[in-house]
Length: 117
Image (tube, rainbow, N blue to C red):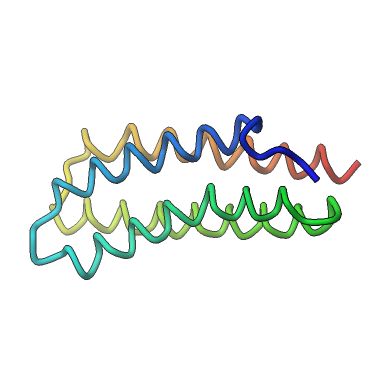
């Protein structure tokens, strides 16, 4: 079992969630229950899965939840890029989120390799 609050990937996923929530304020009001809701659901799922996995009984189980977190990160990336394609968000708004997301994806992947040893 791991203390998720001490994991850098969890803390960074929480920071990402705050940044993405702020970004969703830029979406059109008619998207509140559509794309905005999906984006928020995906971004919350990332640190939530890291935390849930940290509380599991084995590193194998933790690894599985890190995989879920990674899947949610790719879902989030798709939704943010779709928001850009629909001209709801500008490239300047999207790029920092995508960079932050790619960094987190790499670090989760590396952490998964580390705990498998």
